[in-house]
Image 1 (tube, each protein chain N blue to C red):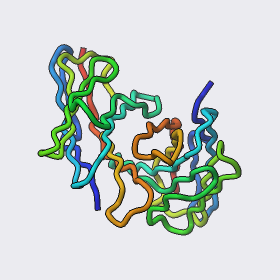
Image 2: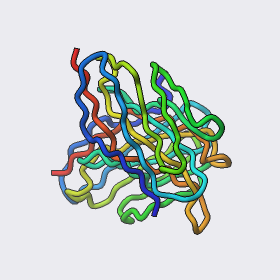
Image 3: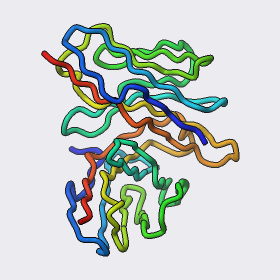
Image 4: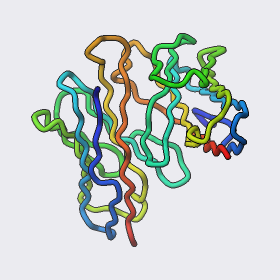
Length: 117
Length: 116
């Protein structure tokens, strides 16, 4: 079965530090990739997405992610984090099962990021 | 205006009870979802409906029954609640299922269910 792994469950950084959150998926076919963010007390919202084209995608608030097909990875990066980036970050993949049928959105377990001022 | 709203926000109940969580979206989307987020933060899809038709049903106990009276609503009814049902349940919607793989999902704020 397809799966999404986020290796860092808890990340604590100081403001201005650089951020990289790992995301790997297990599926050999065509995938579409997402990063969602959940700020404290708020609902999940889209941070950025990759469907095709340039593997380096830019999202809101200075975030970017790079799709590396050979590594089955879609890591999230930000050169300089702010206190307001404190949130839960979820990587998600939507793909079609090998047996066919509806596309299934699959989420990683999330990474909790705390940024100290 | 809240795009995807679910009620209640918190639900505390005893084992064996039956409860419902409601979800409504005002985005005009065709597709709606229910997710369960466990204590380890795993977000797992349970069901998806497209225009009132069930299209995803991911190995969920049949104590869980989704109901979609129209495409703007997807309610979740849970019978005979068990301790393991304690979790946060998220509703979401997306534009359509026809291009499901490319759809961005819009989430509700979640319902925290505690079964005692």
